[in-house]
Image 1 (tube, rainbow, N blue to C red):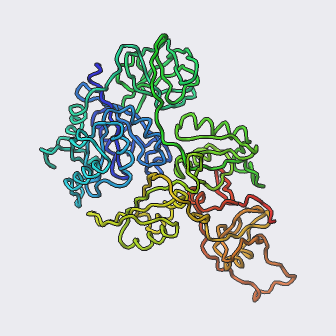
Image 2 (image 1 turned 90 degrees about the vertical axis):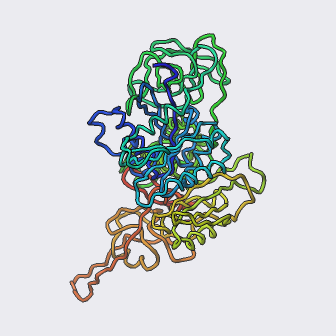
Image 3 (image 1 turned 180 degrees about the horizontal axis):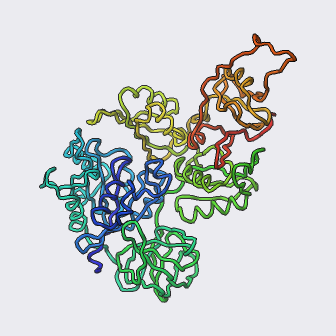
Length: 598
């Protein structure tokens, strides 16, 4: 295949607008998959957490063949917490396909990745999806995209975009001159990709050059680098040189060479210029490394990634139940696991323990860190984490802190509750607009610290119907010290043992319980909220005193109230600075840092 027949396209969308479904449909349309592979629903969401959360977390490169052209499709995360993934992989693309719901139009989450595409000068394509829905208004959605691109500073060339209308579920598409009834399958969309997007631009010269944009790992092959060939060709078994800024060149050999075919990586003998390849055999490669041949003087700029801004302290699990439900990681093993994660994730930073206890991990947000914590939990590991904190570094002016803009779309009946919640976090309402789809778009500005835990609060207030997206918005004066902190006090177990109904029945009138009869608790574990002005250390393990004579009139039936529980991300934003979360494969427990009352 010639370089002129390669297309590299990033795909962008708000959550639930059908991005992953659309790529799945393209994979099926081009018969890149076997019949067995087509049995699943969302084929690209192969990660367990992606399927459970319904979002794209890891960027993936897949490829389809259409009319003697090879189309590399780069599936990008839409959430700002995964901006590190977006910024690295979007640099491999020559065009961006923005997928928009024909009913809702562009939503806040579309803004972030679309802005990155515009800043990189990518060609813009539009796919208006879900046109088969009864409430669909494709032209209105298209006009809204045009307005959004103007707001984001798109160039004249980018505003002169091509568009198709489609339904990923019904597997059809048509262009501006077609109609709903043309029955052309996905051909109009695929034709737009090959006819309206240019072949990849190459560097001058024929020397082979590739920059590492992603890292992967295989237990059989070791570290795998992924990147787009900027010039020349690479061959299996070829001797190469790794160039890293500020370091001495290192020699290596490309042992294996791959590119994507459908959902799989297939072995190839030669990587063509402009294609996206994966390779292994070179030790200790890192993001932004340049792979070329000996004698080359090529220099490429480092890949730009927004700096992480939210930190969490990881520590060894020191509770009385340590090791009962998983493998306890000691400080050295915990640090090694976290450093390995930072190798693959350019938006993650790890600082070794200065006090020999706490390892600081800095990420883009609660969701970013929550995915890492959940992955480690599913690996069977036990550890503790602290409340997330917004990072304060030397670049922040004195007396100021980072601020965000928050975009919330919600139904009218939840407006009051949402505004009250943001007011309590000292955020300012910038605008409120009634959208054509019947929802209301609210834009707030407030401290990043005040927005920690906001996503779960808004989900609870709106019954899960509202959507929320945040963007960084510079610095401003510091808000109150208590902004974002929990106002409720808690009940804490004063001993270790089994919780019993006799005690819980008397305690439930003093707050809301998080535990049930028969659960094992330890001293210092948080077992519920309290209605008192300060935390209560209580005994939940005391049973009924038995007498020598059984008297039925003295027996009492305990009417127990419902308990409540939290997800990992909810717990991260709920705990206070003097508390920790104990994470095990089976449970998430909350506890005081000091396990004994002072």
